Image (tube, helix red, strand yellow):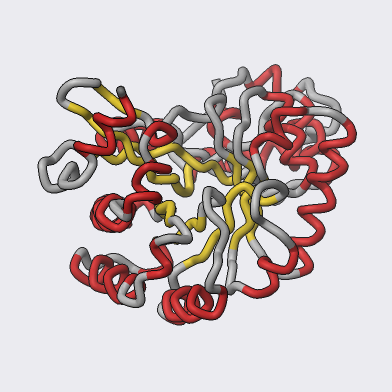
Length: 312
């Protein structure tokens, strides 16, 4: 019965103001700074309440209303990214392979970011794995057009589903998102696979994002594996735009200054990877770390002062 209701009511949901964009933070692994977000659609159904995408995206793809849903999300993502340009936040918008069947898709994306005055490098099109790319030449033409404008192209859930090395080589991707199931399995075997995927991406010059981070240990593992960005419930839940904007401003992370290897290892060993973390500790505690000498402490003081911080 719920499917019947969803299929009946999905056409026109965007025009009726029932679709809502939520944003899940992406952190730069090296600094811990919020550097981007994945835009995720929700449906505020008048009878069923807040409906997650898992319940209606497949229906949208089957019925063709994915074009309406997708256009709404492109519009919302571009508008929000433009409002956050001072924070240098990049927004990734999910796109189904079905949307690439529309020859006008890339033109509509271009119109949207121009309409909002958004720099194209602050927008990423994230190709989802719910459906395979059937017309590869047409998809290449669409994505090449967007890439030529400076828009990023991401392949989602790599390592499962329809993704393959053949597709990775065929389409103009700039980013690879490692399948969250690999992260959640959290075994030596899966981390070996993650390391292999990182090596593949590095060889092709792609940025690497790890999804599904649910613990500090997993975050440390993706850091060790060499991932560029990370997202997951441990780092930040999907949230409405106003909450996300507040989240960004509350999670500023300033990278450490250039330090010698002993000093950097000493700070990382106790979980201090940015100046905000260092400023939260007592001076005596920092000075007592093995590897922190007078020169390293002086450099920290200078960097902290420049960032408007100081040791307790």
